[in-house]
Every structure is written in structure tokens, then in C-alpha cells.
Length: 390
Image 1 (cartoon, rainbow, N blue to C red):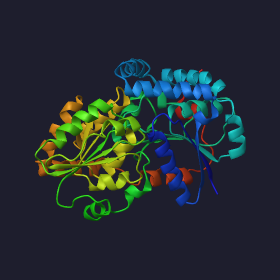
Image 2: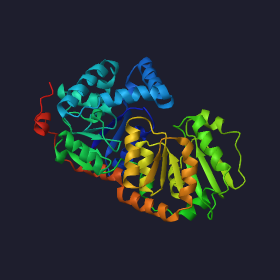
Image 3: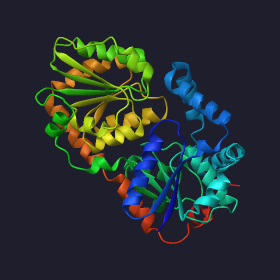
Image 4: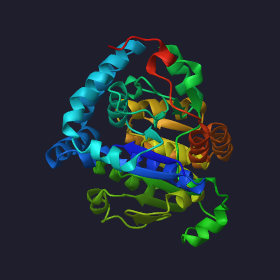
């Protein structure tokens, strides 16, 4: 039985979701996956500091501006420079993750997978130090790849779209290392579902529009603006808000009730995101790689608001560029844009058609099959790139 170690970092929910989806696919195919968060192997102080900084960058305007500067300035266009930069980051990270050696000794993996740049730094460094002699794979969970994902010695990169492939080829990565599979998402997304059946199961109207707003990563005051305008509209329908782990948002919406025509369903953390994607006429969300991938796979038209400066902007540009949704820089416009779309069924149908062209409902299974089917050891870095990264 092939033992596969999957490493991610719990900065945002998407990386862990992708890791677990891939693990489920590997298990279905008879492999023995193990999913680990690299931050679990850091000290409690380091983990708390990194997590707090990440939340600050996501939820405050000043934090986002700082993140954008760092993100853009660190995005190396030259592949050798990217490798050197990421090797340095691996060296800086290694002392704070002192218990990883025990993990590798215990897991004895036949292959390893990185689903976060931090995990990639660590795995590439182990390979360069002679501590990793099994195939290394990288799953990129954004639609356009920042150079932080790129490390030497990778057997294969699994990519979200042909646009991801194009950008990496322009950087100089060998085409044979790049495979467009989609981002691994819950295997449930590949199962056929009927909208009417799903709506009946979740207590949603069969004969009126359903709008779902995934607001967990959006500032509460901005979500309130969208919800208030939708509820005061004259269009009959149901608005479903999903706060996820964001208890502050759930509290911020607690004073809202049904509008004159639009009903409100407030939800916190749920385990049926896929049902809501199937049930919805329009989905309002940020541009995280996982939720975008799931929506595209379910052909749900997207209204993307308030993308995090950096990778989410790129994801949003991808969705708008392929015609599967619209991107709005100002959340205040989200309600009006959604209402306009609901009055244009032919436009919504076109968005669904475009989503079908770029969605990958079986991405996790595709990647799992490639990993299980890859024979032998990964070639050394120079065999792949012939690039000096010293």
C-alpha cells in the first residue's frame, strides 16, 4: 500500500480542505494517505504569531495593503531567483519546525505532497540536504501561481487551470512538470445532484431564486451592506448567509429578518456547502481557490467581492476573464449586481456554460491517480531544470 504524506499549513481553510480531499481520493484508490499541518510541528508561540498575522492581513485594510506589497515584491519572475529565495525561506523556517524529523521517521512515506508554500520550502530543503529520496509533488491552490510555490526537485506540479500552466511555462518551468488537473475539492462535488431535490432537502423554495452569500472571510460591516440591500429589494427569493467560523459575522447579522419579498436564512458553520452551490442561482463570495473551484465544478454563477489583495485578486480575475462570474471591487455593488443577474437568465446560463469549461469536479481523483501511477524516485533538481540554485 502506497504511503503518501500530505503537508499543508492552516493559514485559511482552503489548504486543509484541499489536503483532505486529496487524502480521501487516495484512500478510495487504495493508498494510505496521512495529512499533517506543518504548523502543528512549530512551537505554540510561533504558530500563534503566524496565525494572528495572517488574520490581520485578511480582515483589516491596512493588513491587506501590507500583504499586497510583500506579495508583489516577492513574486520573482526568474525561476532561479525564485528557487534561491524559497530555499532561504526554507532555511529560516526549519528551526521553528523542530519536530518534523520525527514525523518523517514515523510516516516513512513513499511520496510526499505539498499543499502550501511553507510545506514546499521544507520538503525541498529536505531533498537538497539528502533527507528526502521519494517523489515530491506540489498542488497549487490558486489560479495564477506566485513564485513562492516554486521549489526545485518537484516530480510534478498539479495546476488549477491552463492559465496557471501558461504563467509557469513563461517563468521557465519544463512543460512535462506541469499538469492541469484542477484544485482538489470534496469528492461529493463529482456526484450528480438535482437542484429541486437539494432545495427540498434544505428547506429552500423550488420556485423562487436562491442567493447564497459566503461571508466568513469578508468584513462584517460590508456583509451587512449587501444583506440589507438584498432584503429591502422587491425581488422575491431567499438569501442564505453562511458565516462559517466567523462568529462575529453571525452576531453582526442577528438583527436582520425577512424582508418584504426576500427571505433570510442565517447559517454559521455548515457541512453542506456543496448542496448550497447546487441550490443557488447566484453565489456571492470572496475568491479563495477552494470555494471558487467548488463553485465552478457545480456551475454556480459567481459574484466575487472584496478579494484579498494578491492571490485572491488573481483568482477573481480568472473567474471574470473566463466569463463564469463578475468581480466587484466594492462590496456595496454586490447586491445590485446580483439582482441584475437574476433578471437576466440568459446571462446566468452563459456563466454556467463557461464554468463547465473550466471546472474540475474530479480533480482530487485525477491527482491521486497520477501519484499512484508515478513509478520510481523523483529525478534530482538538475535533471529537471539544469538550474544552479546554490
